[in-house]
Image 1: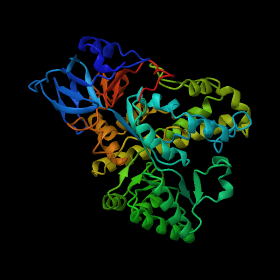
Image 2: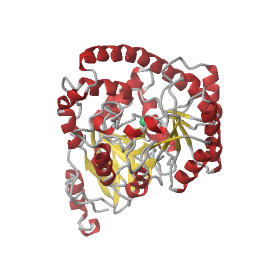
Image 3: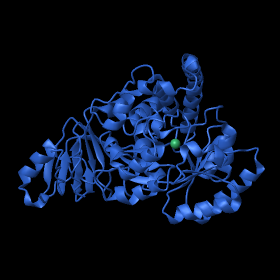
Image 4: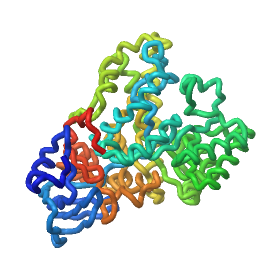
Length: 477
Ligand SMILES: [Zn+2]
């Protein structure tokens, strides 16, 4: 049924009911009365936002005229933010160990190559988890070549978040140590073996449309690797691509910035950042992605092998496959290489995590106070860090580190969109941008945990209730 065939009052009624099996996009809609946070840091109480054919036509206060012919939706007492952006995810990982055999090898039960074939064919498994968590755009910062294809497919699919993807990663790790996280058919991690190999990889990824070239670890004492890395950095510049670096050590992160890294996908977690780091980050115009919760996610996933995984997911946004795996995690305890040392391992992890959390929190505050752009980023897909809902944990950890909730909201919307190269399209609620937004019951600038009070998400003008599953059979876009 075409939406234009519906009488106006019926379209609104359907929109409010948000029939999950066949949601009706209203082509011309005015939402009034909500307190609107537009993603720039501005607040509009008693707002009006007019949405036409998937884009924002105008935003203003109560004086803004409501155009004739627009449906009206009164959201007085509610809150609106732009759709959230997760600037660090991996579609080739599941949130459990089946996607990370290097962390716990359960391949005898769940075949890894088969998993990758499945994920390639069924990215909707996570699309819905993202949208129903209020995340309308994600940056996959490293994965199999097939992840590059998600960009175009997701863009025109209102059941998916926008996707930017970097594709295969370059690393100093030798090929023989990468067999567990590559498949025989496709590689996501490539050993950077020579300058020419690196340049060719950059050219190839760029020609396939990669949004970023990701380096997984630096080996500062390996002169040959560093020479290859310099060649990669030059080629990234030549291809007008973006250098993305995983470097959690201060010395590595500094070297990455000297080479022109534009995105640091993790916190510095071994030492406190210093003036030199801040100066280098400013010079490189780099974005800092804290990923505060991912390591704790691993701990939680290991714990789940012997006790229940705590899933804070009242809307059941997490896909059923992941949910089932986590709930049956005990079946995989037998794969622990050293079961006798299991409890000790958890204790050691907990202790080192506490120290690391403290360093990461201090560094985040310092980076924030220095005015370096920060994007909300989870590293979702790693064991225990679930696609979609983990963004709430991450934002709450940022708040505990001392970042004001109103600032986290900007980091999780505007800055994230800019990081993935889409700042002109979404990330803020301004005239001309795509109509991607979230409706909340509670004010997220009072406490960022209020993002959990989400009731609806809109992607490209299509509004849905987040506590209802999407249709599995229809995909009208
Ligand atoms: Zn990652």
